[in-house]
Length: 295
Image (cartoon, rainbow, N blue to C red; front, side, top):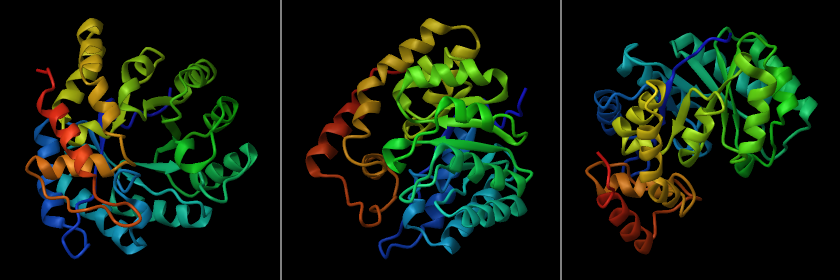
């Protein structure tokens, strides 16, 4: 059985920016504390939702270290260290290991992409250069490449490749991964509207966008499932279905940043080429959020 970095809900946290487009560390500190107060199980920094793609290497390193320093071991911190350049991913992973993260999330190579054999060699070399547990990140809608189930099986044979964040949206594929890998590869949902279906396929949690704004609710949903309260857990999933889908009405993290800004947080605007949430969608999303029938 592979190491479990966390069970439950990990927030793929947004990165707050100031008006002059720098990282807002004051807001980031307050947001980390908000997440921990509301029982989140892990924090994932410098991922897709954190806009790592438009952050410099220095900024990414600073944000990862800042998060580790603020969390002080209270919950696991997982750093997004992936790249389409294998050597860059290795270097960022080594840095994250040296400053004390509990795991790394490594997206498949994007733009240049690769073959399935190329994916195996890419992850093998990264795994060889770190002792950290690695979560594979499969998000073909972003990267243009899919980690196929048989590739997952090969990668699951590597000791420190312990999990996959599955954001393909393909439940049949996720079922195949679970059937092939069993306890040798833990599965996290990468989609907030598929958590309970993936849990039923032996998933152990979610890396979530919704939990930026609803951390305790998302934590509770998964804990209900673990405690055997499947009906209550499913109700929580269905009660946020429309809301979770609307959080992707524009490219992530545009909607969640807009929603956070409308509800007492100060996350600034996304970095170009992403732009601020449209006024129409601001109103729709805020109305959905304020009218959620949840407890």
